[in-house]
Image (cartoon, rainbow, N blue to C red; front, top):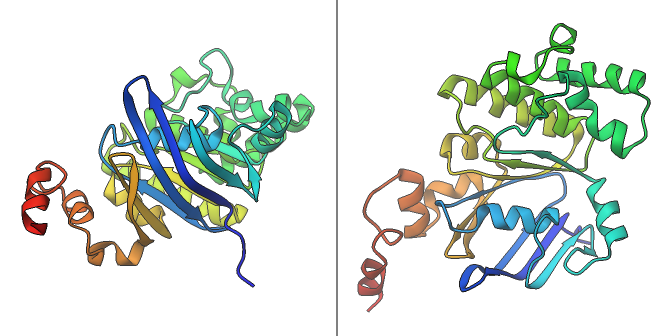
Length: 262
């Protein structure tokens, strides 16, 4: 008997006025696996992520998490769903006015009714998991470097021991070495939790390190998906152009593909 995917997307569409961003996204994310969605700017990566999270409501189609429909779900169903999620936002999105430990513990205090004393203890445990600890617990985000802030954001994303973690461009703004450190931490944290992960990125070094499976989105549709090991032999000229960062190809010159198939 095959196991139901953790997340199932079928025919998901989303438009903003006349701009059709998602045009029928189909994607399965297996339980306990790390899926990375790659694609250029404006192709629908962030919108896909936000539709699964429930931050945006899809116009049509189906998004199921553990078999439960998210599209058009009641507020209560969505709230229950959110308890399964952890999220690392692109800019870190830390609260400037709160100390580091409270940033990490925010979901525990406000979502799980954990006492502040216990939440602080758990927050410090999570900070240690990402290579930091009590010494920074009472500092504020502005007192940390960009790389350290990203680690704090990761600690917050895993603080509630979520079943599913979303990573939105996790290495944006970091130098290559710190980006690699963050990628390693993401892999380790996801593995330690046994979580399912969904990452969006255009950073191929991140994609190759984080992913079990990769999906490429282009013009609002998933045009290729497969194991990360198959990425270099995808057979898709779109994937090939993107992962090699080539200026010429079907992404930048759609006519080239039409001529080839004519």
